Image (cartoon, rainbow, N blue to C red; front, side):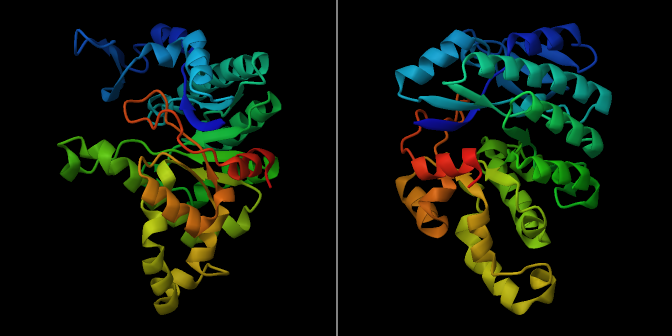
Length: 313
């Protein structure tokens, strides 16, 4: 079984963070005696630095123990560093991508990896992606946008052009939603995370980006957020409003089948609905390991989707 949604922090990356802790405002906080320290970058999105995030042997052992034969490793979203100057973002991206390339190359039967890129400077992000794929990575993991700009914004064209040229996997992974209404009961994670994916994916769909860059393989985290389950409303809007339909060549429902989706949904009925809506060949097993809300291990092996995403078919 594959696992397309996992995260890891190589030793070289941890060393870089410690060496540059003042530049990125890194802090280690002991919140609970029964847990590991929490790592916070720039006073945002602190997360428990579990051993599974940083111990390569433990990561591989855990995968083998539950029957995952091949994992696609992604950088951790808290370390995208989009809110820093591009030279800092790019420096860490280079360290991260080189480390993952080396690790995945030495464990090629068990691992593939995705890059992180300097999305805060799209021309540089394009070069980051090119370098990473030359080194053997399969594409990149990116956030759903930044600075109020969605991914269809013209400023991101250099990145999309390179991703299309490379036929890259682009894994769109949300950051925690910062809507002030959600500052309680873990709602930034519970509904804010899938909501961020929903906004980004809807923008990509309605903008016509999927037709313009149709060689990019876009993977949506957490089952596509809420998008697949409100597609009927989008179809109705497409019928009623030229502002919705003007950039589209087909119904929104049909564009759902141009994305890939992971299985991080924790609900069999929801996953079955997704499969009926987009086809099993567009779904890949994923766990979000080793975050607290991980679907561990992936419960269903969608081998058709795994093959089509990795091979670009």
